[in-house]
Image (cartoon, rainbow, N blue to C red; front, side):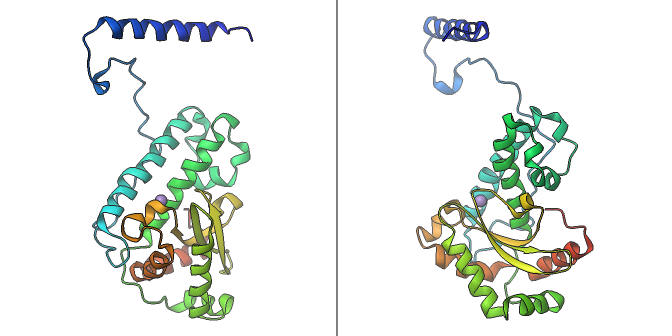
Length: 250
Ligand code: MN3
């Protein structure tokens, strides 16, 4: 294979850096005078603040897990998504749900990054929103829809727990909501989301190990069972109403 001139340039640059490093006094890696990367783009997407204290979900999720999950994992999805969008600026002006529903139109060079990190950003933004509550059960139209579509609260809960525990490896269990109010339970691997199928997400649980491992280790079923205790059904009922009004985004 012949060497591309651009590649030769890169190699020459690398040799120069290596030579400089040899001549310079030894320093720690952290201080290495590497060619400074361009500053990471800070937008168009941003990390939403947690809408409650990190220990607000102690009934299911410890504060340390919340801090790492939000401050490190979700932040990384946002940063990587922004870096991908910087390479495809035509995406920057679009709503995230529209991008995810049309991944086939995203430039191939950044499509996987947008899928994983755009999905991760949407999923986690929804996830923080629906917790911080005291569990219990929903009321009103949402409870009526659960009765209609799942045959009652207990069966809904059992079916959602089964979807959460049987998702192989990393992924999510979701409840989707149709414009006319119909509900369905959906499993997705990785950071995929029903938004990618053009569907709306009512709620979803993150069953990646990073969501529960500090407290539960391999006991995913116990995490999934406890998760009901921190749901804010008022928020989820508001999402249900927004979905029916056609205003629910992510
Ligand atoms: Mn997660």
